[in-house]
Image 1 (cartoon, rainbow, N blue to C red):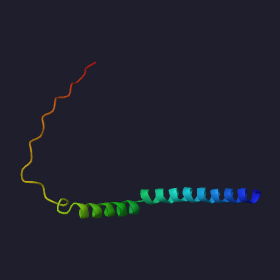
Image 2: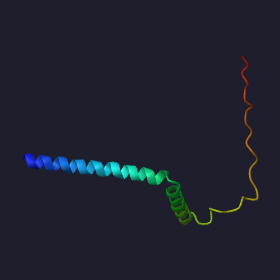
Image 3: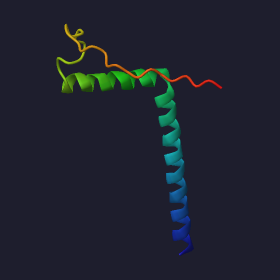
Image 4: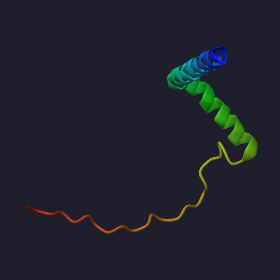
Length: 77
């Protein structure tokens, strides 16, 4: 029985070390400039495939005028 418990403890330790290592290297990959560029390119390729003709279009010839906004109130002390 003790061997079984020790085996499970070792397995749990290895799984924990694997999860921590995966999280560390995943974080390093995501925060590296090369990793970020690779992720951006992959996302843009997915978007281009899902929305053909919408990306890299020129500005439309006619746009709506800007919406009016309320002037900011200046509070004097």
